[in-house]
Length: 118
Length: 342
Image 1 (tube, rainbow over the protein chains, first blue to last red):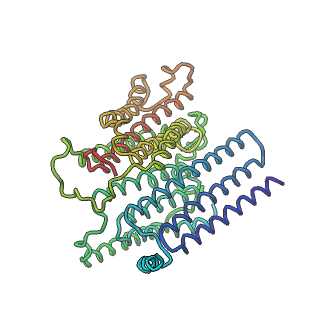
Image 2 (cartoon, helix red, strand yellow; image 1 turned 90 degrees about the vertical axis):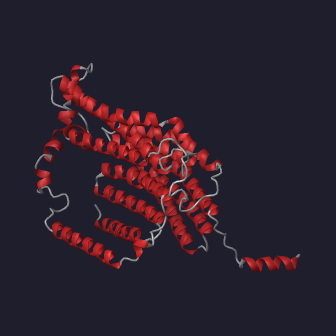
Image 3 (cartoon, rainbow over the protein chains, first blue to last red; image 1 turned 120 degrees about the vertical axis):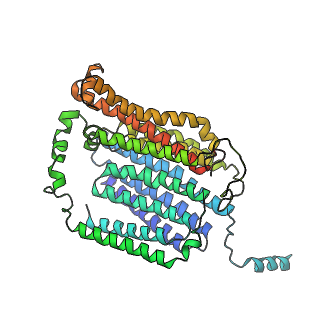
């Protein structure tokens, strides 16, 4: 019962964060913001979903089942390591190839505003 | 099998295939092709052929994409303008593809239904393989026993094909003697700013590599009981070296597995495979009839000897595939000069 509840909560949370990631990728204004959404949301939701599966797998307790649970958790650990690193690598490549970050106002307007303030 | 899910994945595959053709930027095409490979892998998993999916995941979606990117990086990134103008050629190409597609579509009509037990393919020898594999070879994973034992001769030449691919890439791309002036494509399609060492990427890659190699060995050794085997394990082993080459530089990879060692290992892998076959011959059985190995292996019956023989050739395949993957990457990424990587 508790296991079921935990599975449902974890899976739903994972799905929610996946949805948020998708919305973020589609709606955010520029490359860096989109990767920000993809990197964080993807990692968190994958880990939540995988943990949900791992918990669900404990339903019929056996040594073999426990082994599968451990393997699923290991996948979560490796996603936790690899996914943010991949995001970092992509953003780094974007930065090196000279993509300018998005700002609320065009660069020139911001410049003049700063001049006026100083 | 859930047909809705199948249809959805198939639709995505068609979209990916079209997108990778339409895109002008070859780098994007390579990435989309990786996504296409991954979707194929999902589809195969969904249809129950986990071994094929497991091969596609590291080969198609993983190392294959890296090869494409390396090749694009070292040649040119955009479709040349000369080939864009010829409408006639394009039309001919479209016509050819369309006619081939039409031919294939008419062929589909004669196919037996999915998993039809009365289809010719499931009536001839596959029933024998499915029912007798435990009795004959004591290997629970039928795919492995078919691949490595019943059809071992085919698999030997598959390994030889991979070996030939590696030899061909080395022969075509390798430039000996270093330096030697600039070549025609020396200016890559685009340049990065003098790749400074990125601590995060290097650290995480260094942490992941031992786990990858351990996992690859597990895949090779556990191929009898679960999906996996020599090809998959070999590709993952090779990918661990390629990851080092990408996150550090080519020298780091070449220090760990030099070109000479690479060629030697590629040869050794195929030699192990063929050698086990020859040993079987010398023991008075057919080529690759592993049951003869029971005379050599202590405590092995004729049945378990077949299982051990399969493990032997899987190890050979893994060594060959690993060496070839690394050597193809090194040659592609450095334009055959082995000086600097991507």
